Length: 209
Image 1 (cartoon, rainbow, N blue to C red):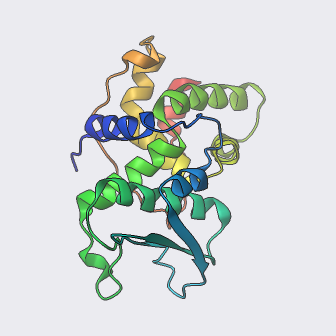
Image 2: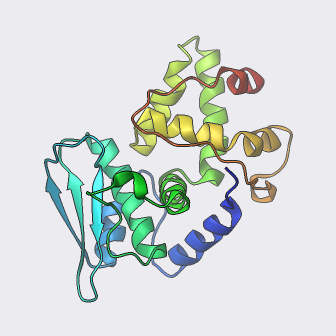
C-alpha cells in the first residue's frame, strides 16, 4: 500500500502545534484526550477485535476502551481513536455489525498517526539505533532492543517492530549521515496488526550494528 506519511505527519504536527504539549516520554495521551473534552470510559469487551471505540457527537464525544487489554495496548488504542477524532468525520470509528467494512486508508492513518504520536520518528530513529548498538555491545539478546524501547515509550513490542519496519528507509538515511531533520519520509507502509507477535528485524539490525 502507498500512503503519504509526509502529509499525515504534517497534519499531526499542525494539530499539536496548536496545543501547549511538552513532548516528554512516555507521552501523556490521556492529557491530549482531556484537552479535547472527550470522555474516556473502560469496559470489558468480550471481543479481542475491539481495542477501543470512538463515538463523536455534536456536543459530547467519548472513547470506550477495552479494559481487558494491557495498559500499553490501551495507550495505543487511545491514541488511535484520538487520530480518528481529529481527522475523520464519521460519528463512530468501529462497526459492530461489520468490522471488516472499516475504511483501510482511515485505519492506516489512525495506526500510523498513533505510532507517530507515541514514537515520533525524529526521536525514535536515533534511539532505535542507539539501543541496538548498546544491546550489541553489551552482549544482550537482540529481543532486548524491542523490549527496552517498548518500556521507554510504554507500548507493546509489536508497535516498536511496526515502527522499525515502516521507517527502514529513513533509518538507513540517518545511518548514512543524513541529519534527522533532513531525512526524507517515503510512502512505503507495512500493514500493522497488533495481534501478531513481533518478528525481530534482523537484516536492519545487522546494518546498524
